[in-house]
Length: 109
Image 1 (cartoon, rainbow, N blue to C red):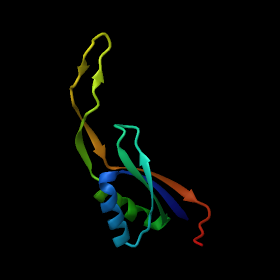
Image 2: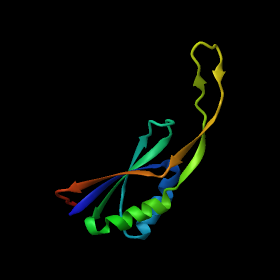
Image 3: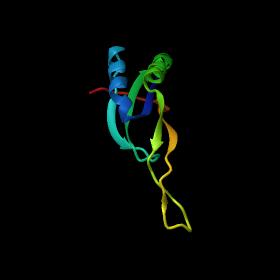
């Protein structure tokens, strides 16, 4: 059975991931999207693979899309105080969010 991987990655990782997928003979459809967390740009890739290739593709994604620490530049608004706390927290970003969906039918026209 074929699987559709709905793969959400940070914009920083997209080029390397697409290059890696192409090198290994996989295709992807790229959709621009925006993440809710930190409101940073990300990209959604639609990747169709046969079920027996699923683990190999997931390994490529895991190897390419690394997590990293980044400063959260969103200021914290404190209630009851007139000032904005400019404290910057480190947050972990990157990696990938992947949804695997069974595909009943696939046609390439």
